Image (tube, rainbow, N blue to C red; front, side, top):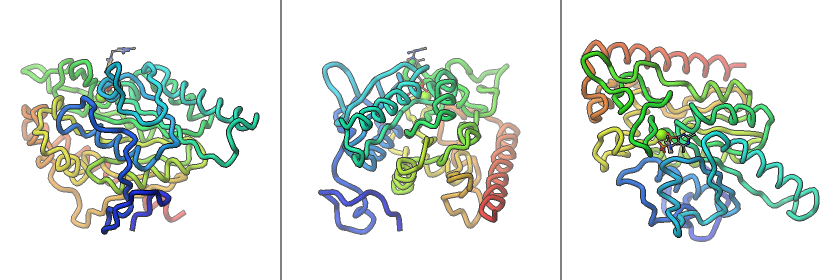
Length: 321
Ligand SMILES: Cc1ncc(C[n+]2csc(CCOP(=O)(O)OP(=O)(O)O)c2C)c(N)n1
Ligand SMILES: [Mg+2]
């Protein structure tokens, strides 16, 4: 049973829903595309985080869609920052709160969450230096990279989180090119290498799993990082109504394995008793992968299986310790 938030008003008292508050802190009326996985993820994360939260938002889709002047979707304090400095600004917010506590201006026992939302371009490429610095300094905040696997806001340019073989406007597939020619940068391993207390992957297709991980991340005794798979119908060429399904397919095929690293201990959080599902199930519903040949798919399959086997080994190894 997933134990999420402290009890709050407005709980629906039926089955799994009893753990999810009705209150919204990322509210409707925003301009996200139909079927936007990232917007759904933000909504769920904010439900878990609650009202005592300060959000630092790097430039990108989630900032653009939530703050067209004079409107806002944020029912909590929110600051828009550049790609380069999102984690640095969050560090400053955390330090300021510490000082205000010392001065007695904020009660010691008042919990305040600080959450950064950055896209994959803003995190894996442009903001990684500030992120690394903040993690090494040990500032207590949660950094969520919502990963729609390209620079979507500016027209689907490839990032270092774009998966191998995907066609984007800067890595177009054609006679001479498979599309993205590199393997996706592994943000989880990079952040975990800073030996922070909690790192996880998640996807809004598994809402309770996502919220449970957010709770663990916010309660961690230091910095935490969540890499959230975020289906993008506009950039990927997928039917908006399949967003939840595609998120599940990513996890079931191993294209985006769900796991956490809690104080160094790996744990795969999605049970796949029959092993991985064929990656074709995930690839074939997306225009960005339409050009891939059988041979290309084999190359991807081997890599995905290798990574999944490695995670299983890491789980056995670190849980035994
Ligand atoms: C330093 C800098 N370079 C380029 C831009 C233009 N720009 C604004 S949003 C964006 C795309 C961001 O991609 P990502 O971080 O993946 O977020 P997404 O749009 O996919 O949500 C770009 C390139 C910028 N704002 N700042
Ligand atoms: Mg992106």
